[in-house]
Length: 292
Ligand code: NAD
Image (cartoon, rainbow, N blue to C red; front, side, top):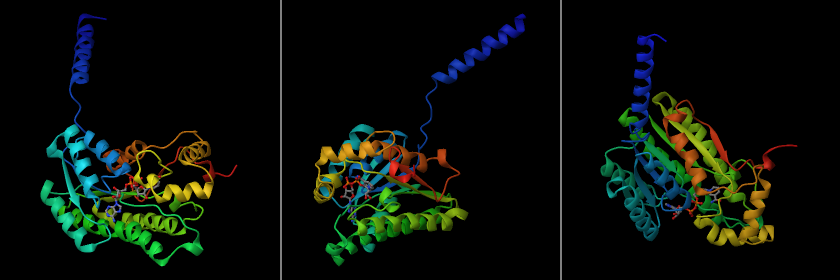
């Protein structure tokens, strides 16, 4: 090496070291996300993930106590100025309109909608009442429609594109025993996402889906009636169910709310800038999806 070459290399190494030391900008800094069901297991984990990337988050939920607790927890971790609770029921049009208007006032706009508020229900078809069928359709299909419609209006008005992520379910693709109402409503969500991806594309509004398989830890769904019904369908208890889902996965691993949040973050960020109308299954490789 001559003197000039040695100097150039030394200079380059110093510059590289300086770059390494510089704080990296957060990937969602300045962006606003609204998460329905934000006080629940997957919703709150998603709020954590997006806020960790610098996003301001509106958590929307129907459950007052859970909403207050989640707001306090997230505020303590990331700062009170970065999180706002908004209470609304996703099945009630007036509440959704008001909820979105309030959310926009809080942070001045919207970049990301995570439509996640939901439930799970199980009953053999002969025992599925019209009320149970309608409840699934109302919350899962109609609820997802109502919040997407408001997000689309905002995105179009802002003229900077937008991002919608649906939390649907593996059960929207694959039938699950004694859960026709739930599976059908989840399938409707997935198809709604495809239709919206097509409608939003020209305005750079992306719409994608995350399909979780069973997420037993942290989810309120797995603390109530659904747990009892699944336990009775598969003749086991909660631990047995968790083991069953683990064994049925190709990776032999359980799926946690944080795993779903990671996929949501990917779809909500520019990492997936060229993806729309697509589905990510987060199921540790459910072997039932493959023929052997
Ligand atoms: P969770 O019960 O912990 O959270 C759901 C949240 O949605 C709750 O906080 C609840 O208060 C809220 N909510 C329910 N109905 C509402 C309504 N009408 N309006 C507004 N908020 C409402 O459950 P989770 O496991 O976090 O589920 C989140 C989503 O993931 C749901 O759509 C669910 O169907 C889907 N999912 C869950 C699993 C799983 O095994 N946990 C698997 C596949 C799909």
